[in-house]
Length: 389
Image (cartoon, rainbow, N blue to C red):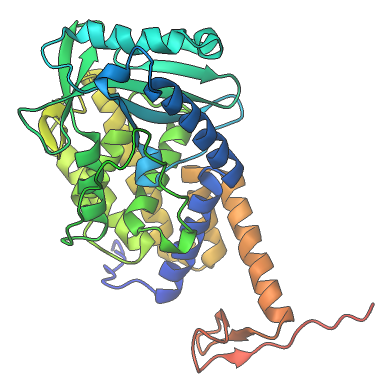
């Protein structure tokens, strides 16, 4: 007779808590360092000032420079390895430019950047944006834009250089939608423009990050591992949109990630051919417009791999479960990099050792190490006293 393991409706609290802590540490270790953040912020402010300075060729169009993407959403991740760069996405929104051909707008912003000798040397034309390559560190992608007066509410139109036409977008509306999803059903007001160069959002302390922000970081980190640094197939905006659509407000990072992966996987299985993935703030914008069937199939494989491997950590079989919590590090290493997971485990060991030596470490009734503040039923563990013996 074939023995079948009975379905478990609940998960052990200790396993979920262990995964929550380590997933959080993986995110912290994967996002931009304070030094990288400050470097990006300095470069961003300098470029914004150059584009918006009074007296320049763009000045009559009242340019407004603001961030979009991961820096605005708080979902940055470091480069996959030392050979790759991180990026910062900016919008250069001109005003009073209605009725102008799209290539005129593109060329106006390009011309202003090229007037700066430093920027001219690192300037690169892309399909919809202009890139400044800061060699060996990161690049700034600057998106020329005009307001979409027909739609309003932050909607813009951006020039497509290859198609020579306008494309719809709404990065500010997208950010407002994303943060509304972060706090689930609590509306937030869109920020008003305060200056021609808006500041980057401050680096938020780890403990104040929303679970949805962390989920996006984890999806981007595994994307970089799975595609070995390539981002074309699994664009960050697609990952962010799908995560926001299927997040259900769980406070546990592990359970929230499982829910998102289950939701995305189920939706993709119902769409064997390339679907539309629309900007929730502007349904005219299709984030999946660069996919063909081959790219879409690879994206589905990435989600399937992510979901199946993460299930091994969250819901191991009986044999894996008997190996203890540390065995969960193997599937996490497959997903996010063994080196990154090893760093997270070392951080936990260091924190536990610090708590023990300060007399704040205990053991609860389930035999799990914990801080004394975590529960009144925790029994103190004595500090190590080696004295050279």
